[in-house]
Image 1: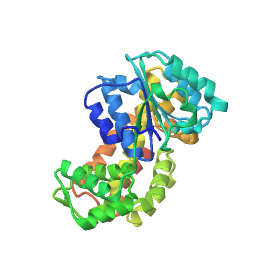
Image 2: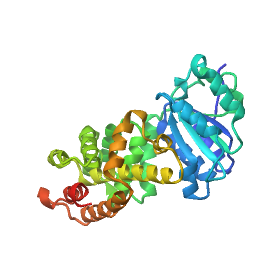
Image 3: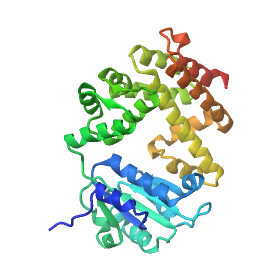
Image 4: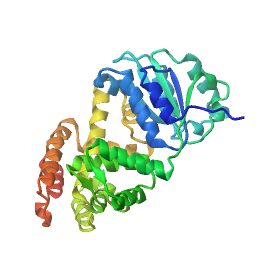
Length: 339
């Protein structure tokens, strides 16, 4: 009979008791709930947000040398905090033949100061953990059923003091594909929008439009490389009807990732390590280096007030049909030419 592990709901109740384990294994496809629990563990592990930023690192071990970097981080004594949290995603990508000996060494020698969190989308522990599974707190993250998704969204809206009508609820589920991470992003967008009262279908159409995601990323990529074609790309996504607040949100997320990277480097982290811990995948690192070259620390600091200004103008009714008067277009022009 297969082992039965606690589910996410049971595990969150355990976390309410403020007790942390040294080693965790998170199983299953529900990535959004995994990330929430990882964030909660990190908050519990560090009282100081600056220590949390320097003492936490996330690695996608299916990418090249990420596993070696993760092991080095997990086994190294903390320099700027009392402990470390090392997160290794997709641990099922490792094999006993190639990484088994190093993995066993990691589990045996893990210092008390390091909390190790492993994740896999599989519903059973991967073979590489067969000999050491008893040392891990294992949690099963099951996919949500449709009725759970609807209840989750409604509860999230109530926490914001909002309600959501049936058409909007159906549309939000359809556009997020029952993905909790996308649903959380959508709820965040609605929260930041300043909307009050009842969330309607037209709001969902404004804030949740995954069909245009690729072109938004193309624009943000060109913008942070300071390529003039970014303005033409913005004109394209603007004409397609992509909501301005959605674009501002993506610009802010990229700026915050670069800021986190700079903070880690200033704290003594090596470049590759700092990118890993900032959540930059191996395949995106050359692109990220271009962003950092285009926006060195002092220039980047001047970007945040510009983003804040564009956000304020949009929420105060400052959007314009004229491209030259659009707050996001003006933000892009300033980032390209004025800083």
